[in-house]
Amino acid sequence: VCVCVCVCVCLFVCGVVVSVLFVVVQTWSQLIYARNGNRLPTTTITSENFPESVRIFRRISRHVAKDLPKGSMEFSVLSPNSHLRPHCGPSNHRLRLHLPIKLPKNPPPRIRVGKLSRSWEEGKVLVIDDSYDHEVWNEADAERVVLLIDVWHPYLSEADKSQVRKDFFYESGSLDSWKMMHSPWGKFDL
Image (cartoon, rainbow, N blue to C red; front, side, top):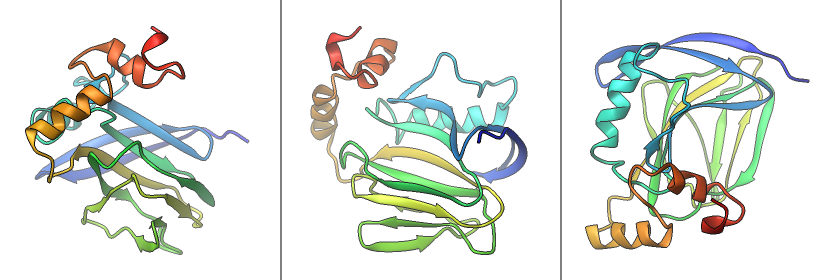
């Protein structure tokens, strides 16, 4: 059953209050600003409707997430009584920051990464290496909203980052690069 829900949330990030409007369909949805290190040309997150969010995303994009293959900036919404099955990210070249925006209380949503399970805490960023097997539960009667931001793994040198870009056929600012990373045929389906 698909249910559309609109949620207005106020977010405090980097000392700035950001208003965010979500449209949620099904059990898990994403409001995406950037994928594969590049802003999506068709994103609904624009400087007109999300001015502070866009300002923050741009600042992050110029620094810790600059030209990050498979890097994402998005809001993740998990509907009530939902479970994201075990899955993993593409490699350990990035870390994923989780900033909780809206957390139900009873019971609190939780995430398992590898053998460790945790719940999010309001006002605290949870950092995970999503190349490990992980899954998420929201057994409450309210939705869970988390801001996800991918950043370069801090132990990578510039030479390492260059090799990762080469391995992922990454081209800075290229929409074809984004399409390539999301095509079942890789670089041959352009």
